Image 1 (cartoon, rainbow, N blue to C red):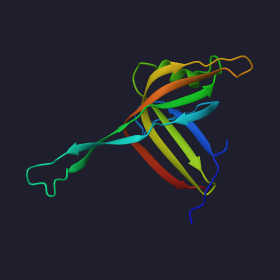
Image 2: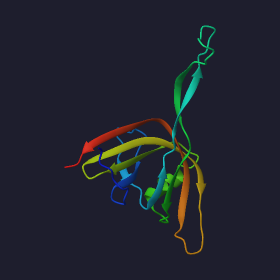
Image 3: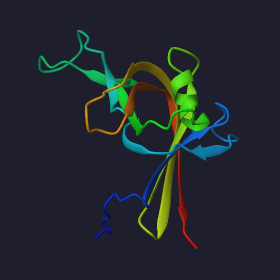
Image 4: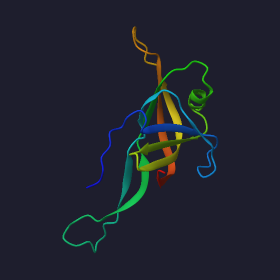
Length: 149
């Protein structure tokens, strides 16, 4: 049975890359992230039904993969240059993000490009100031698993 782990503060980190080259980017942790939803992967269905399809059944093949919208939310640190990379990417060129998760034995990192497509600033009396950004992944992710020393 695989070891299960609870996602705690020390087990998950989110980073922004210095470039869109996932292999050579330098990664800086984004402070105060409290929620990241990367968006789900959806697979296009291609209809290949023909006159020779048997049994009156449609025939389909898997096509291209695409992503649904996701969200990154963090407590705002006014003037923080790392958070500003997310803020400044709204409506602009893609940026690189990386998520790392560890169970104490192995670390899994998932690096991917996102377009920042929306912004929300929920404010309420007594709440911490936070920012929420809609993100949409683009291109193939890079996944790596390493053993911790």
